[in-house]
Length: 90
Image (cartoon, rainbow, N blue to C red; front, side):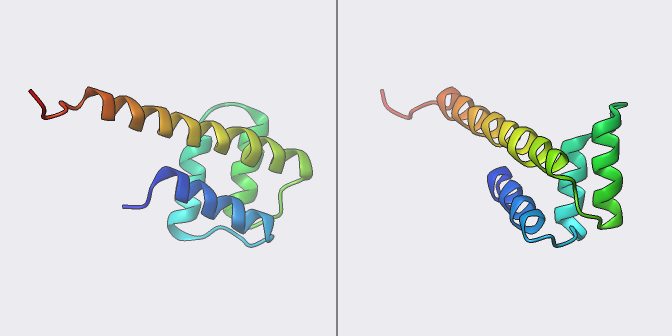
């Protein structure tokens, strides 16, 4: 299973290279955006589905804010799970 950080990296690299997102990468990107009612996020999702290039602002919001937040949240969850596991020592 690919880590959340790796998936975020795949999305970022493809968008930076102006490549359309496809398959699992597109599905992951859309799942990060969610199904909210925000016009900006709705527009980003529409463009990702259509394979269109994001504006500079949309790219910044999605890649440098949302994906970064997703990576940090995944790292924090992993750290919490690690702390919750018994150490195995007496």
